[in-house]
Length: 300
Image (cartoon, rainbow, N blue to C red; front, side, top):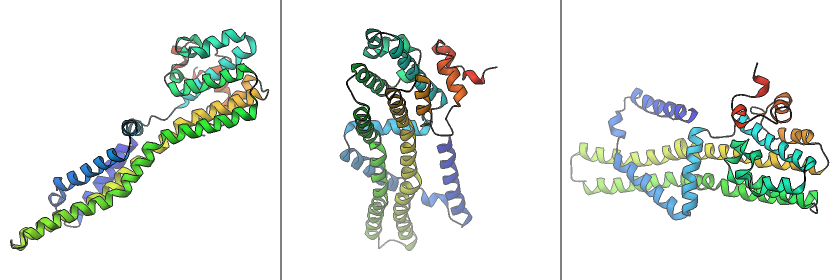
């Protein structure tokens, strides 16, 4: 919604100001200039990136448009599944815990937290490190180093759409100049025509320069930054898992380890200690349907 509002405000200010200066909007409407710029930019983007990155860019843009960053409910579910697994490790046999982490999609524990299970990558990340903890021989600093490296690798992969979109944003002004040059070539081919017709050709050519700059700084670059912001918020879940498990490995009780993870959540989305306690510790037996209603501390 914020992206839509921002784009409407941007275009309205641009066109409104142009009309207020005495300009005619019809002069700006040069569809083939836009086709040249947009088509060339799209083609070079496909050339420069693997299909997986191209497809992931589409997903990233959709996430940005829908603001698909984790909300408090997702963070509570993440803390909930971590608490449940830590409690299982402290109170049950190794075989019982392995049943959950070897097959999370059929585990009743994971199925109680569907927002976590919906992310295959995050679920696998959690299961991998609980499996290492079950082995019992890994040292805390070794696990921490391994987690850091994996999070870095995941972040590099998830932010590829941002970096590739920024490259296109930087190239768009130059592509606009190319479109303008083609327009000037067309105008020079009609040099023997009337000044009025020649002026319209030159005006159309200059629209190419305008379009390239506008698309770069007012459309693609802000969209790329939004993709980055959403993806970075989604990556925060891995840091929460990391800090929680490290605290648990260092001897903290599950409820204390959760506090280490809770502190990794941004202030705007961070649940209070009471909400976390009611949703994870006191509410450990609640079903997935009950969890999706509203945080326990917020219910009357």
